[in-house]
Image (cartoon, rainbow, N blue to C red; front, side, top):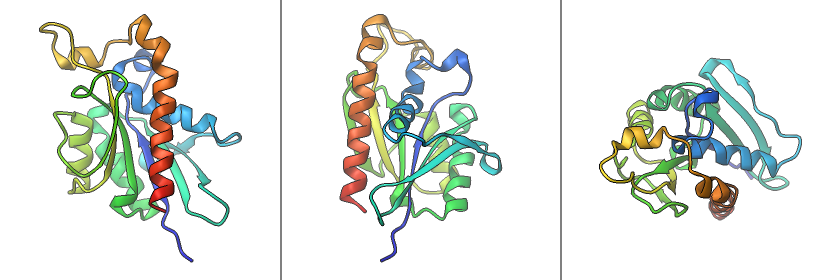
Length: 185
């Protein structure tokens, strides 16, 4: 029996300045996923300017390729499209984990296709793939307070209370990804 691989990409911005920002919750979720598969480590995939690793979802089952881009969030599309092409991933097997302003903090939503809700990383991915028909795992970061510019809000670090909840939220997001993969493999 032939299984197509799944590609799971956590969106974020590279560099230490952005590690703990709201926009990087997708990349933080990739770290949680890696922690569940001991011995699985990211390595640089030079052709696509990403970091990737892979493991099998179950013995004899499909492979999961996990990745983080090494480009700015707004330029995520080119490396993601490169990975899709390189690994020959059907778009319904591409899973993008990202932050979502329109969801309350900590809420998680999975959907196939749909709009980008103003998310520049998703816009870039959709533009590069020439399609919106991929899976999105949206992790709620809530709305900015008052009249704060959303672009400024997503680049700020999580506050103390939010940081305390992050491990649970990332674990919940990865649980949702794993449930989705097992239900669609």
